[in-house]
Image (cartoon, rainbow, N blue to C red):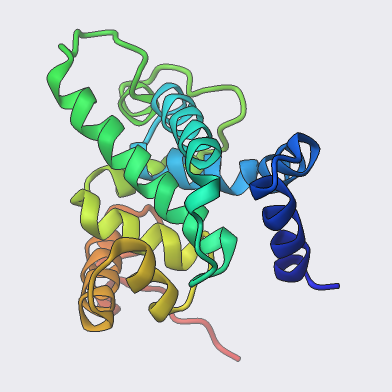
Length: 193
């Protein structure tokens, strides 16, 4: 049985009131939902809040899930929306020097990133933090979740052409921000075969 078929069985049981099926479904998808939230929000604390909000929203709305998309695609939509809501809430909160909410700024300032962070992840997170949320969401769904363009269009509720544009523009904006990627071909090292 494929994971999508397994999900369908669990969703049907959860809609019927089976709490164990719902818990199993949530456990199965939590890590990816949290990863989506982490990449979109840019820091651990906001990702934790967004992931929790996403899980609560999934529990509340499981009865309305209509099987038009895979459960995972629907769950990513909920995670993206929760992450974007968290970003809006973050803008309304004051940001004080030394505030540890933003791991990327902490790492860039010479502070210690979260213990689970690797240098590469901090670089990617810091670069993603510079993208507008709509570009960040499209890039994360494509490159982290490996959704196809049609699924991303469904998650973001935009046309496929808009998805392609957001991914292309987001990736183009990331190139100069990521360390080890010189901006021009002339600056890049040439390796011999």
